[in-house]
Image (cartoon, rainbow, N blue to C red; front, top):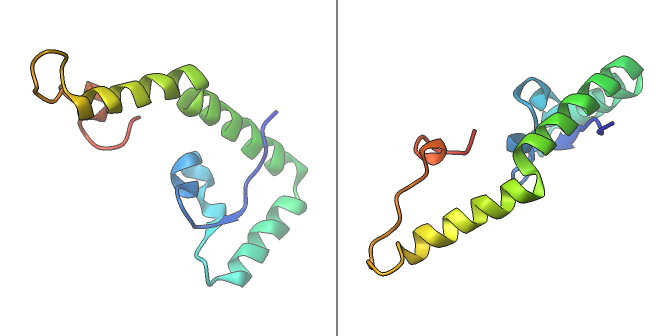
Amino acid sequence: MGLPVAAVDVGDIRAMLPEQDRRFVTPRDAEDALLASFAALCGDAGLRRELGLRNRARAIAQFERGRMIEQYRAVIQRTLGEPGTGRPAPLPQQLQNGVAQ
C-alpha cells in the first residue's frame, strides 16, 4: 500500500501526485490549509487508504525504475543528437505536448 500525502507546494510534489489528490498540496504560506489537510487525513482512515493506493499506482506507472531509465536515456539522446548525424533526436510522441503522461 502507498502513502497519503499532505504537503507544501514545493518542487515537483504537485506533479507527482494524482490530480484529484493535489487538493492536499497547499501554498507555502498557508499554514491553516496544511493543518486542515493533516486533520482531514488524520480523521479518515478510508481517505488515507484511498490516497495511498492512488499514490502508489501513480508512482508505479510514472516513476518505476525502468520507465525512469528510458526517460533519462531519451533526454540524453535528444541532447547529444542522433548517432552519426549531429542533429537532435526527435522528441518522443508522449513528450511532444509537454510533460510525459
